[in-house]
Length: 239
Picture 1 (cartoon, rainbow, N blue to C red):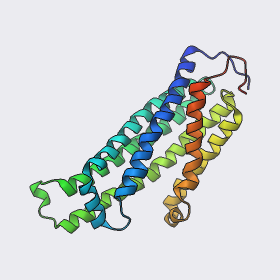
Picture 2: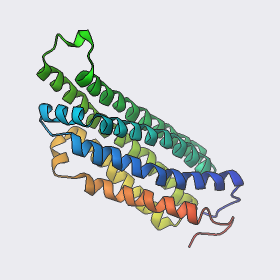
Picture 3: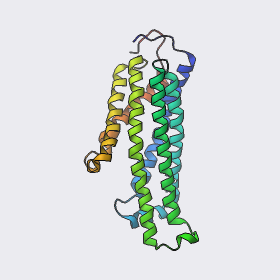
Picture 4: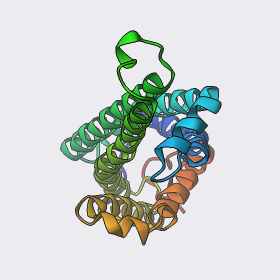
């Protein structure tokens, strides 16, 4: 495809895309891997509850970090749409809608996290009818809903990212090898999340490093590429 005129709004939006990718990665890693990885004990409601109560501020920081990531995601999706709508307005719009559904699902998962904290730390009278071990089990159930919600959200994230990467590939705004890597990484992430819904035992075999690392390196590379190189001059192909 020969690149036509790239206007200023596209160039500015491309910089926003790059900045959004890089800005979202640190808080996402902090919330999902450091905070939850440190506090959540698999299949042990008592230890999980004890960890959350002992590190309540850390748990709240993780929740707030995730909220910041989801706000950045809205900016990212909007900027991607602005950059890529000249390639195909309908496909860019579809990808944007998938992205909004993805983000809405992720935001709902935060409510489950806050619900777990409320069950463990609230002194409300209506919760005193429950024994402590039952409250701990209910809190662990809410935390489990976080993982389930993320799995569903990642399916839509894979769809959104695959379609946007296809438009990057079709446009030649970035090196086609990078766009092709993005399509592969996005498909792998979405397909893995979808397969875990049907075959949950696969999640124990296919670790997050297998399906998460490719999309991580794509987004990291895209962030630096768009910030440092931006879109190519009109009529020129990227190196």
